[in-house]
Length: 302
Image (cartoon, rainbow, N blue to C red):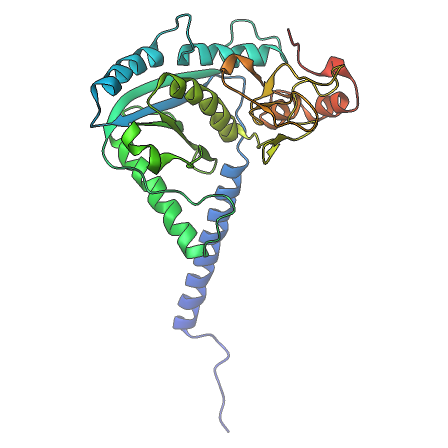
């Protein structure tokens, strides 16, 4: 009579232990990713953001003049749109919902402009038909190019927004590449021409992508602002034209059946009620009261 030993062999125990370790690692990784994707700032403290400015290494005389203006744009708060003014914009917008006198919700630490050569690998675009491995590879290459640029940026904060300016000769490469944000890594990416208009566009897109990192979602569908979340004053009478652009919609509804007016100046953009809820400025109950018709639950607009 042949008998078998019911006890598992040592190798079987090792294989089982390895399998459990792998499964535990995958589970922990999944939880960390989900946590990163759902991260919302704690607004009891100032949110510190590193803003990395990148500019082409080879420029024309006119573009070198633009680079000098770019330095002033980054660090001075004068009567023109500057990054210092953008910090103030966040302070004003928070104050429309919550009384926090003297509190600065966002601090931007500027680094650069750092010179670069070539262009970053293009990221996958929305709606682009790509196999999983191709999307993964292009995302990895895109993020890797920017991580290389961080080697020249000491003392950076966890939240980082890159602003890549480009010259006229590279416009054909960058046209159609939209600003994007990767909430998981807390990285935002803005692309703008090296012109006066490009600096204004950069301000608008920095605010938009930074709010993506804070948890806000887009509020446009094609070239239309989604109603009511993508409107700053959805219950205003008369409803049209609207006075402001919702920062996550980036358009100003002006008339029924017409395309939205473009947002050209960051002073014309506001944080709408749904965006304020998503980033943690107000709670769900206040948001619901507002969209149920209680105007007092909305922001103070002037």
